[in-house]
Each structure stands twice: as C-alpha cells, then as structure tokens.
Length: 349
Image (cartoon, rainbow, N blue to C red; front, side, top):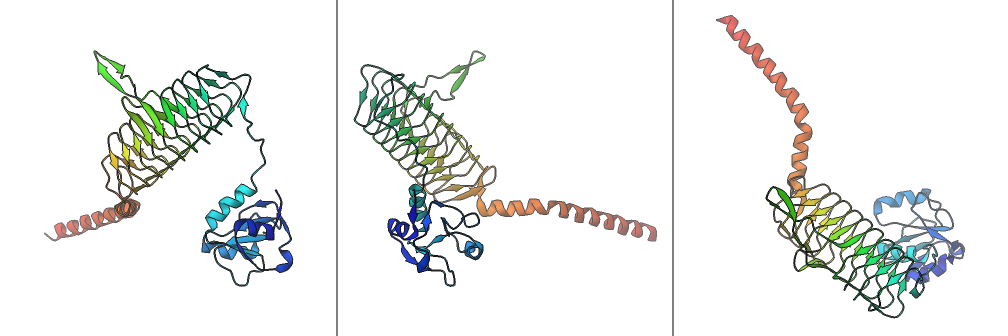
C-alpha cells in the first residue's frame, strides 16, 4: 500500500499542517521516530518523545496537537493511539486472504452446520454436532470437538484445539497452538494415589475475546469456565477449571489463574502473575508483574510483590530491602563502637 501524506490524512480524518510542498510525498509504512525515513510516517503518543522529532528522518508525524517549529507535515488527530491502529492496518502486509470453502484434506463430520463464507483449512478435523457461524476462518491443522460452537467472524489460527462442548462467540481470535477445553488439573488423593476428578463441564468464550498463542483454557468440572466479552489474553497463559473472567480484562504472558478464581470487569494481570485458587479479584484491580495473589482483593486495587500487597506498600518494602546492606554495615560499625566503649569503661574500673 502506498499513499501520499495528503491521502493518509484524509483516511485518518486528520487535520494536515506543515510543509505544503511535502504533502504529495508517498508513504509506504509506519515506523518509530528513530528509525522512520522520508517515505514513512511516525507518531508521538507521549510528550517526552517530541524532542527526538528534530533528529527524525520521518516524512510526516501523527500528533494530537500541533508542534510549533517542526518543519515536517503533521497529521493532527484526536487520539494518536486510535490513528496508529488504523495506520498499521492500512500498511499491513498484503497476505493471501482466506477463501470460502472446505479444503479437500479436511475431515468434517456429516452433521456439522457450516454457515456462509466459512473457510476451513488443510487437515482440519471437525467432529459431530459442531456449528460454525458465517465468515469464520479455521486455519490448517485445527481440531473442533463434538457439539462445540464457533460464532460469526471468528478465527482459529493453525493447530488450535477446541475440545467438546465448548462455545466460542463472535469476533473471537484464538492464535496458533492454543487449547480450549482441556481437562482441568483436579485430583483427589484416595487410597495412596492421585485420582483424576472428571471434568464434565465446558468453556464459554464470549464475543470479541482474543487469546494468544500457546494458551490453555481448561474445561470446568461442572458448569463452565467463562472468559468475558472483550477480554484479551497474551501468549502462554493458563486459565484453570471453573475460572470466571469478567469483561474487558487484560492478562499478560505467563500469568496463571488457578481453579475457581473469579475476576471482575477490567482486571489487569501483569506478566507472570499467579493467582491462588478460589479467590476473587474486584473490578478494575491491577496486579503488577510477578506478583502472587493469595487472598480476595476488593475493587480498584493496585497490587505488587509476593504475597501481593498494595503497590505503595510494596515500593516502600523494596526501598527498605535495598537499604539493608547499608543498614547492616552501620549496625556492625555501631557494634564495634559499643564494644570499644565498653572495653574503655572496663579499663577504668
């Protein structure tokens, strides 16, 4: 895709200011400030990056307000992040589009319901009773188990496995090698051995959920494991059995959510966060990377550390820990001084 700066501004609904002689220059990509060249557009999402623009070779810049003294064309928008998303879509690599139909190598059971516009890739296996909504894409190597449902305009990337009795909503993306509906990690120790507890429930993934690569969402023992609408899950995340995740949550890579946890709406879990089983996290709570949460958390909290505590308390604790070596040296010095004083006092006697 190639657009002039003027054409790009129109596509973004941006106000265009700056060098009038440059607005006809072609733009072929979007890049960060330091690496963009004259045929690429850059962007400023934080005022601290404005100073770097004077050294940038970018052909134009997307900003939220005019920058005085800058000779580059400026595309002024209400929201730079939103404009950046649209710009990245415009200049995305042109990949071969999925085509409607079922690849000859796919194995589809006789009583599967497939709506219009669906693409089924090579070596896909779809079992009895499955329903697939219109315009969904199932890439090569996927497996969909009995009586599962995939909504409209959803996409399963290569080698995704959907077990039986799972319900995937509309506009859902599941990236490569993720597994939905695997048996949960539930055992009872009976007669000297760990015995697997049957997991007879399912998984419900609501609309507009995105799940990264190599994730696992376990099926429930009874009822359903649920991921709420609009939630986004990064790569390598484990969601255990009977977990209920609210709407519009963010869960970052390598996080683990233990069995029967309940997350409210808008919860954010940083990378490598771990939640103990059977706890509840209130709406809007944010948990910093590598924190371990072992108790229920009210809404609106910011947590860090292990075990997780309020972020401000965690920062004070870290500060104290970092000062411990100095405090230890001071303590040794004080101890030596006291010993000398005591020795001098003994000599007087």
